[in-house]
Length: 446
Image (tube, rainbow, N blue to C red; front, side):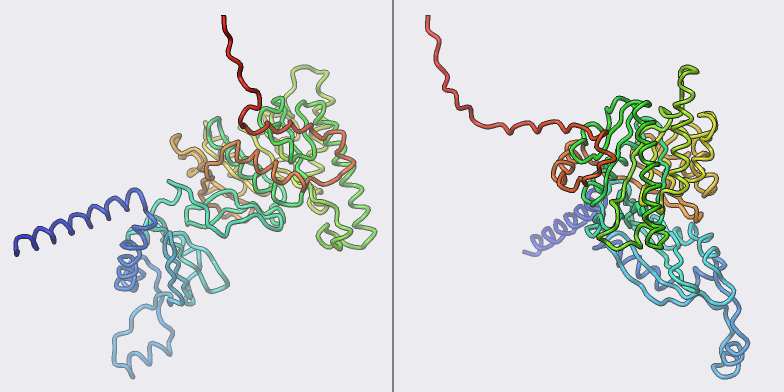
């Protein structure tokens, strides 16, 4: 009986160890909740003061505090680390809110994030300022970008579309109110098209007008025609479309001036025009020309794009520009247009210069990260904006059929805009569902 008990205990122990090992590789969220989070909390609690001290995140106490410690408490005066205000576990990591003492700033904590990561044995540590004097340490227990799972609460709303997952486990959201114009760069097979799919799928659920510009004869965007208000597939049609958009922008400015407001969102809802999102699939097709006779068309396109990028935000017209490269070699006006694009997302690129085109002018520190994205991780990118902050993101895998189904499901949200009617694509008829044949077969006899 004793031998049977020992055998059962050993078998149970081996099974538990095997289950934990399996969960660590195949179910990292479960492993983090069962093992990783308790271990990290214990390590953080026991080593916090010492870790902050060796990482240079402590300051000398105030004179009053030093006097009280030395003469009343009869203890040795020690440096003061940031005070812990809140510790909160999540499904992907740990969130710790710290109150910074006088003499420390968020940049000091951010500079030590790599040392804190190794000290507490977590996958990554990012630092965010919540309010003056307070920072939040966002620790990730495992590589959340290996298998992307978007948070459940990440849903499109109010011109905000969640399109990817950040490396700290939070959703990366494309907010058109904060960053109305954006540029997305990436080489072939880098995940740029997947990013656009997630964007279109989210935008399809919002009451906006979607305008597609796909000069590759519509091979990418034509399948989303049921939800598009306009689609152009040649540079000549694109030139006409941008001219119409500029005229609509000027009409909307007249409406804003008439009601004494400076932004479309300040108008009453019954007077507010429908927001328009312009999706440019490959910007180089609008800049490059093959002969001199195309120069006049190119000038019209570039001038209209620059005007839209500079002023259309207030009129509720937003640009989403994609491309493999976007530099001065495209021709006159390229760098001027790029300077107006606030949001930047750079996927894997073929050379460092392309990463610098997208990130060097807004977040120079992000250029090395974008240059080191591996080929076996499509969809991984670096997202930055003019605030100087940046983060590594990865888009979830979405099939074309899912996006097409979303476009068909929300066809009723296509607004009635007469100025876009000449460019309205003809939506392909939905294929009938397969079913039993109503024709009875008749055998053929000789």
